[in-house]
Image 1 (cartoon, rainbow, N blue to C red):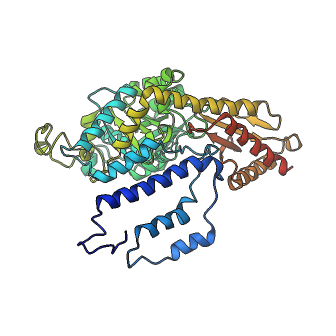
Image 2 (cartoon, protein in one colour):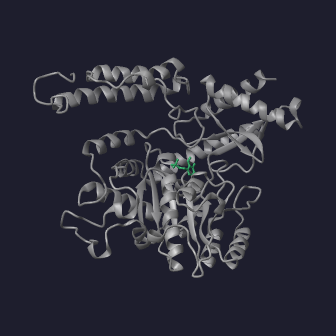
Length: 498
Ligand SMILES: Cc1ncc(COP(=O)(O)O)c(C=O)c1O
């Protein structure tokens, strides 16, 4: 097949059924080989600099190419240089491998290619069904609302936009028309404040900046030694700020921080927020799916008390990127924040007609919306919540194996407490004890050599001003042998620098 394969009009656009089947089989064949041979491949190798330069220097194609040539290019120029996150010895950041069902679901969604802005077509109902399932998993009421979004960053923007709208409306300020510079009746500016711990993901600062609040309005709430926000400190800060005339917009709590997997005391924080009538946004981007496990069900149950929550099925539910979600307890407020359909024209029930249920685009910032929900729907049907509980528990067990091995290795120090499936540790060889700068430098060199060495891939973080190696296991394909191999690679690197 080529772009000029036959003389049917627009033949390159209108593939025959046989052409679809042939290309589909070739693609499936590549996927099968790629995913099953990953464990034997280097975890990561950078794109050679000359290849990257050649990519940028390649002019826009004027004439089309045959599909076989394009697939060949894909194999040579792209497929050999993955990010690394499909590999069982990659445990950096929070990037899982794709569940196979999600890969094919994404293709099916693309084949239908609807805009899920709204209407009475299946994709809208699939998204609504997925939202219902997540409401029931996280204890949100049926009357609440949600949307699939690109990720927890978009969930934060959405949740905090509703929070800002709600707080302003309570003091009679119309955020949508008057904008984000609230003034009192006497014309004095009113400070709008957002509260988070130092461990909150940076996407929340981005959201605060984008919403025009300004990052100077973020109040950092102290944490305990386990890096969990202190509810009493939050309580005191809110009381003082409110007494001083400020308008608290939201508190951002973490259901698993990105650095250490710390879970903020969600129930106590929800009570503080309720007492001060302040919005609680829970960042569940990484840790929220652990609610499906017996071990974390109770600790994460108070997510159901939040006003909004961000969840990423593309992280610890292994759905291909992107598959984020925001749930908002008050559906009306969510719609009032975003809808541009005047109330008298809004249709709440056209379930027999073309319009369908209220349009999803009325609840968020996007109009044309992708069919993200299909891959989440298929993955949940395929694994079920019990399958997810098993897979997530596996990842936690692998992280604990790594933590146990670190604890019993004299040259290594474990950052305690270890949380969810994240392990922070560092090399502290006796020869460098007491020399913080040298220990940091050693760990940075170890990390760089690991990442480029191809045997294991970790990330790093800074805790208490010191560099730590960081492993986050979100891969059901990671075996105990992989964990041991990661630790061996770390020790080899450490010893090579002493
Ligand atoms: C805990 C946590 N929150 C929020 C985010 C941001 O989510 P996203 O990248 O899906 O927008 C991340 C990303 O790693 C995260 O780990």
